[in-house]
Image (cartoon, rainbow, N blue to C red; front, side, top):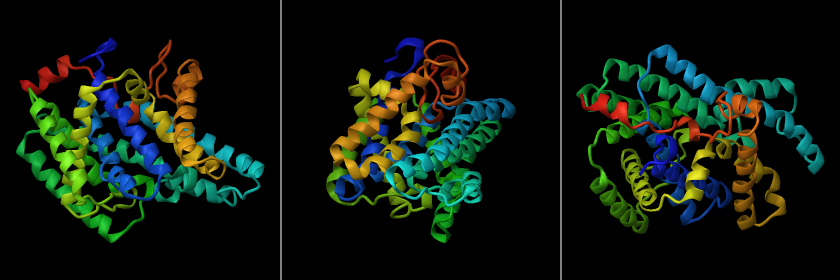
Amino acid sequence: MTGRGDRLDWLDAAKGLGIILVVAGHVWTRGPVRDAIYAFHMPLFFLLAGYVAVPRPARACLLRQWSSLAVPYIAFLLTLMLADPVIEHLRGHRPLFADVSQAARAALLGGTELRGPFTIFWFVPCLIVARLIQNLLAIAWPDPRDWRWAAAMVAASAIGLWAGEASDYSPLGLLTVPIALLFLWLGALWRTLPEDRWLLAVAALASAVLLGSGLLAPLNMKVGDYGTPGWSLFAAAVLSLGLCWVSRVIPWRPLRALGRMSLVIMFLHVPVIHYLAPYFGQSVLFAVSLIVPACIASFLSRVGWGRRWFLGTSGSGTHRPSSTGIPSSRTGDFLSRLRR
């Protein structure tokens, strides 16, 4: 089910559904629906990133992560930090950071140092570091089915769970890297299956049971809160695969479009919520938090500086942004390498 440019349409749709859930979880901050969303919405993005990850030489991988993720991260962070005092002055509020030194410290440390409109910014540096580690391991062990991968992921899970229990402090989102690496590996492992329809169908059925069971515990990956250790991570993987089954069934064009814009939506929806929450009801706020970032993403894709600095590409023409560093899926030579 591929579209123009060999993209996997269902994967773009899954990212679109995922980013809708991310926005909803930040608008409706209490209740069973929010808890269900928080049970898997961020693991989903790591799983999808692992699904399309292609091993590269270490230097090439580093440069790719820099241009496609780090540069947009810095651009959006600096832009919003400059905008915050202006916006808060117009609202009659104090700016988030008391002075330049406090803002500089937060910008350099990131992660849990960033709050309010910047609270989601932990995700990108965490993904960058986890992807770099995954790539190094993939160079050493090209097949994710290698037993050494499984052993390494058991160790990573143990480290991640221990670190999450020991502290909730996470500069640059590094606290979450071991668990992010686990989901990246699960995505790569999933990609090795020659046929996955039954896996996704079973996951969809299990997801329905889990959602109705009351056994789900919300995760807060930013601060290393993984719910019920072990069980919640398993449930997050099942729910993520269940959502991917839905995206296979309904790869609607609006969902695919949102998926291709989801990096920008990830960065901008929380600022929209933060600054507009006092003035709108939750339903309107939800719609605005999707529409405004999508419009900004569309504008940025049409100007050279927008593509280069905010979307992570210097290509010419209209660019459809990829979500959270997840590239367009190229199926042929990647699958052939896995099956050798």
